Image (cartoon, rainbow, N blue to C red; front, side, top):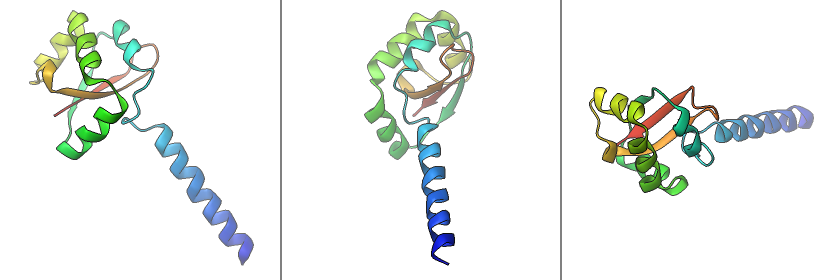
Length: 103
């Protein structure tokens, strides 16, 4: 019985750690990938999520990167958002899969 509990706890911890590593709220290293991006999906977040995003990414630097990429800036505005609303991102290293989070 103890073995089953230990395995269950280990499985939960492993799943939680994996989910945390894939979290869009941890954007370190992905900001540079915006230089190569041509398109991004923009998702709306609430104020609590925006505060979490702001902890892990410099929003001013993120917004500046989006402004410096005309194709990316256009996709943000085409989806009904302004660049000033962008508060976080999740992106692949090569910039092919980009999700921006807007307040």
